[in-house]
Amino acid sequence: MTFKKGQSGNPKGRPRTGSDKRTDRRADTRALFLEKAPDLVKKVLELALAGDTTMLRLCVDRIVPSLRPTDGPISISLPAGSLVDQGQAVLDALAVGKLTTDQANSVMGVIQGQAKIFETDELARRVAALEAGNGGST
Image (cartoon, rainbow, N blue to C red; front, side, top):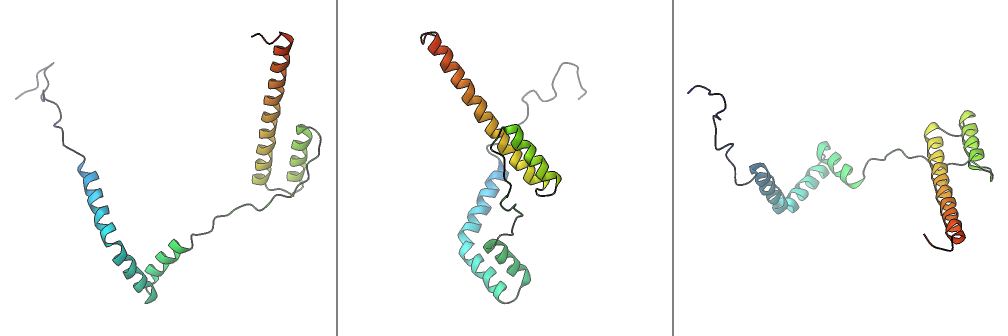
């Protein structure tokens, strides 16, 4: 059968399947593992206690998760002045090595958040003043 222009070789299209077989297999496998889970855990513990280093590592990784690096508390005194002054204090602390770049970025992010709060508050006060000046009609 040769190809004819404008005519599909498969007019019915791709055959439909009832369900995704991979999903069914995954569900079956999960059910099987859940059914045997207590026995599997006991066996892993037995092997770990018998000195199997792979099983021992598996147990330790599950019981005591690996530590992730975290920054300690940041100790910097910011001036009570404007946000510009506070930002400059962070840059100065970074320049002399009191803060790492990650710590400086974190503090600057907090200062930016504070600036947005100030902006929003100022806009709300201005809108309230305008509405009060108009007699409350909008």
